[in-house]
Amino acid sequence: MPVLNSFNFRQRSPGPPQVFPAGLRIAGPVLQAQVEVPTILATQLQQSGQAIPQPVAGFALIDTGASISAVDIEVVRQLGVQPVGVANVGTAGGPQQQETYPARFTFPGSNLPGIEFNELLGANLTGQVVPVDGRPLIALVGRDILERFILVYNGPAGMFTLAF
Image (tube, rainbow, N blue to C red; front, side, top):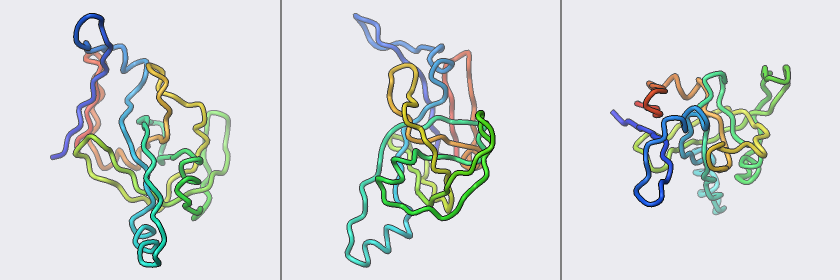
């Protein structure tokens, strides 16, 4: 069973990094993610002699309040993926419509499997960063991904686990 255990650390000088339990509360459950063109599109591009866009790497926040995962619209544009539909979405700012896109998520540095999507929300994540260190967020992992995994949020230990 592929498992990812994620701890928050902070650097102490001198000495090695130490586990920082409050980091999970501050940053939330964040993991490395890579967004790619979907496999079927990559195959079509390759067969027609076109270059396959390079994957976009960054960080994704696990968002149990999101029923559908989202990827930053700038990432989608960088990949050259065209919208396949529109979804009505309830947000903190009220209801709105957002375009949906096919994509593939992978999780570098882990043994978690890649996931193909027929539809992900395109969202404006500009300026959204991991609070602890300012790394930019490129995606939100919603319940459509989490339904494939076991998620354990261990607040006292400052860690979370994803198991497939």
